[in-house]
Image 1 (cartoon, helix red, strand yellow):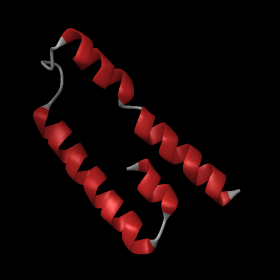
Image 2 (cartoon, helix red, strand yellow):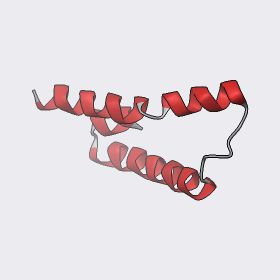
Image 3 (cartoon, one colour):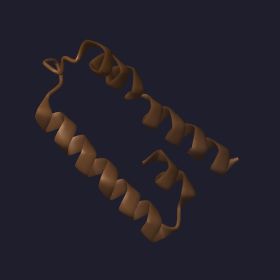
Image 4 (cartoon, one colour):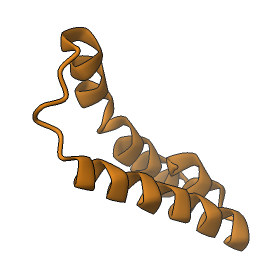
Length: 64
């Protein structure tokens, strides 16, 4: 059960940014996206991925 919840949480957290990415792709406008937030998010995701590999957690790796 822990793994299922982990994978569901990973899926939800990852997929949450898809609507914004689709909107940016369609409109070709990124005016409403903060570059600082985007950069910080990318760094955070990369660090979570490294952490997931370090602890051997597929759920953490999948989320990132």
